Length: 73
Image (tube, rainbow, N blue to C red; front, top):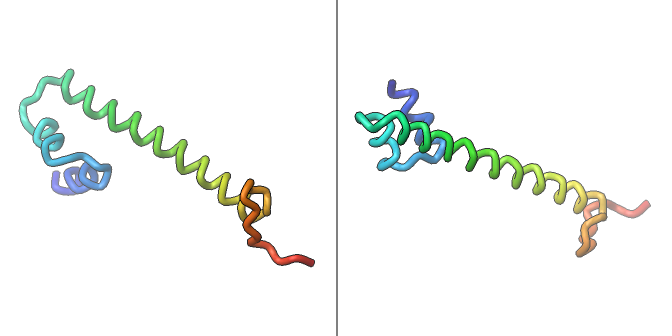
């Protein structure tokens, strides 16, 4: 039980949201809360993936601002 609560906190659930999940909230409320968090994580994953692609472009000198991260040969 405590491990589950720790995971929920790690996932960004607020104290208020934890109270809703643990207490006798309706299943509809709980499902909406969890579904919302899944959607948030999916958006975050997409942003992180776009960030990785951009940073790879920076390393390869393909970024628009042309910062050099590679040495010239």
